[in-house]
Length: 346
Image (cartoon, rainbow, N blue to C red; front, top):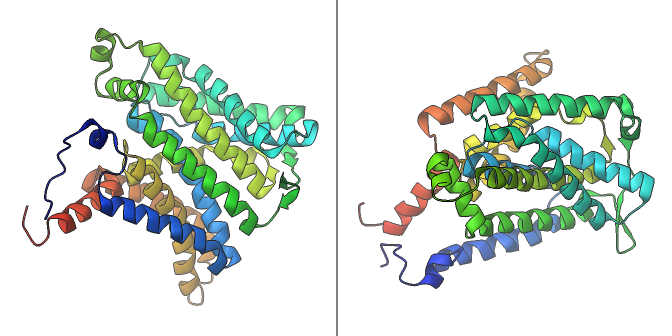
């Protein structure tokens, strides 16, 4: 029985999936994703698309906060930039769906790089406040610029691909999930490159990284740009999914949601962004189910759902920070190690 994971070659060290079990589980998961839309109802297809969009955005935030150590509370606003870019191009220009998504990512990356300029001088709480200020400015632009439809927002036609309208969750599933999977694969490969390793060095000790020759401003802005690109693409997918974009679609609470997702999932791990986003997306649905059970006995239970959800989000953040600061990804790693070594003891 294999009881160690020591790498004996460069190829083994570079491999994303270094065991047969990992590759088998990945293949099985891919098969489940391929079969899922044929057996699931409209509600679960809707939830699967929403989870995939949140995973894409959370993965982008994890690149910035989890891997580079730059705290941001502007992820929802960056998604708004992507969503409005897609909506404006769709309505005013009529460019194709893939072009709109790429333009949304590129535009948001540029905005994110500008927002990241203060990161050379400030970090931690001060940088978080700076990103909140940027999100307030962007929200003001969304609500008052005539091109964005001001407060009433913009309504979009469905996405079109190969001459077909993507107006149902079943059709959108085959676009949103593969794009999210490609973004996750890109993020995983990023940290096998010099750029990704520079991000980690900046997170661990930025002064030492600068002494070693890593230009902090360039790599911090690159991290902001990549993270914002992910948010912009996720926002574009969100716009095509809901087909209505308003300033209220991207409030500050959504940025807190994505930060909570990577904390709960595990900062600094690709798996953490996936698990955290999926977990946090499903929490409100579980709360709705629980509240539905109690509604016959407490008629006002549904009215209390919104504040209860906020309390639960806060409790999850605090609970994971205290009891499992490395998040769900570490719990999964412990389970894997247990079965990897079983029946032997560590």
